[in-house]
Length: 116
Length: 111
Image 1 (tube, rainbow over the protein chains, first blue to last red):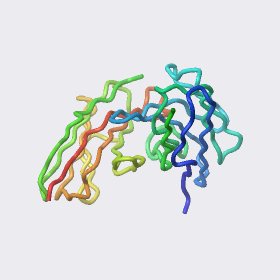
Image 2 (image 1 turned 135 degrees about the vertical axis):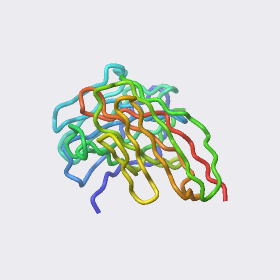
Image 3 (image 1 turned 180 degrees about the vertical axis):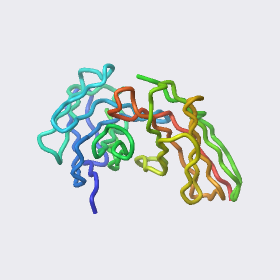
């Protein structure tokens, strides 16, 4: 089945130690997104790639970076995790953005990040 | 970032009742609207999309959209305990490139 896969499901890191979360997709979708969701809060868009074009949200801290080496894979790098970065990180894809059915998001299972 | 507002609840309904979930949004230019269901500790899953004013029905779910009032709602008929979850309203952003989510409404269906 076509899907969005995130690894690992749970990630524990130390304060200040760089960490990378990964996402892959077999849907062949053009757009890949990273959302951050803290407990009882809305998923917050960090950034997205339309193909190779990177789109950063204005309020995403510089501590968060992303890479998309090819259509199938996208990575979230947190350069120096703080305690406030503990959250569920959700990777999602959409066919093409741009509204309507093309904008439907397909989510991976998420990575729950803990910072000690 | 434009806002999407939902009553966080919890909304409690007995099994078999109709659950009504509401959402308002601030960007008058938004054209695409979605409802996602999220179980605790899981990722959101799409249950409804709506793009035109009026009602859209899919099984026990009905989405309602009123662009003039900037209001979108979700009705769940014959609510089941398995419907107990957080329901997220999502609205496309101003650029039409991504979705902005509300905080969600937690629904509890008692048997």
